[in-house]
Length: 480
Image (cartoon, rainbow, N blue to C red; front, side, top):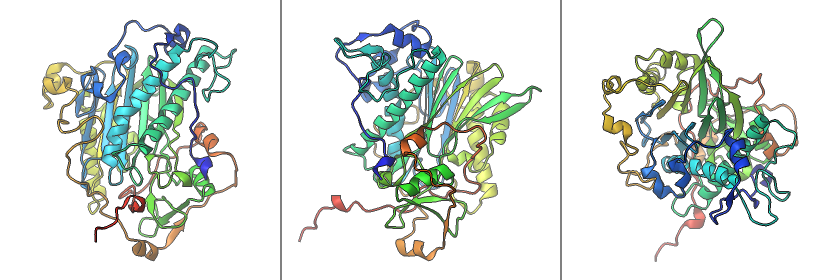
């Protein structure tokens, strides 16, 4: 069972702040050249600095090259979080992410990951620039005792870049989940979050994802027609390879009779919690039973035919196809309104297709690859003030960077069932072919095959986690 969870190990790529010298070769490998200027991200070390970071937006608005928008559903507090951080690490690097929380504290988990994960990725790259004095080798030169992937001596610069970014994503996600496990004020036992994160550096696109949020690419084909290209796979229990891993770790995968299209993950000894995804941050009640936080990493080289990237939570993908999303964004009257129009379109589809279901939260990031946006006057017509555009806090005055705020208590799981109710439903097991004994880490890090086109659920996931488990170990004895 322990093989399903990434183990901790010491590495020379751990975050260091002891004034180590910078290795220019590392920097040039990661970015292809030296940075033309130092950015504010060079000085970021803690979450307390995030409020003053320029070119970082996480609420409804736009940046120089993107627009983002989120809308609360009808299930309680908005548990979706989003971010676009331009000039991330270097002046031509952009970080984008969507994080969809679930469970009693899912909104706080999503915001915590939104704020901390980019810093962990940044910390890895900075530590790779550094090298210790003496005989200890730097990350880029490799350390025999390190868990860092060493680029092959004869590999091309492109392969070295791919290897280093892959390691950066793997280590950042691993460190993020470790921090959530030990967080003193955030209970992630039955709460968690998805993550789709993208780093765009020049024409290179590096992606890491867990859970069922999704990224797609709007591109033009040979006849100049817009087409949708799915960039990430929805990592749900209905994927055979995900179900295999979970079952090897003694977790169970089945659907309930009243929602046969939704495969869920259950504990081996109890019909709980019914998680509708195979990988997530948090959800530590299932981490020994096959649910992991190891991201699926991919690298794509963009071309002139590629026009924009869309990242969205499952509230959008449950009701709109990839092709419909590309059509909506490409036909938006202004680029700065594209994310808002897409969310509004999803809301209409929820009312039309599922009038008796409660609409899920929706969050969208639209990144335009030519680096152009509308003029300020055009954007003002969409109902956003110029002050809102430039503010890193717009609409989030009550929210702190670590997700600790004075929001009302969450009432999200409206379809929570008791153990007795769940037993009354017929279980529909998922069929899995093969009996491969490969390790979970290998399976998790495997690249997505070209012929796979898993697009997630055909139906609707009402809630991502049906049952909240009690934390008996933390209960205090009642006073007599």
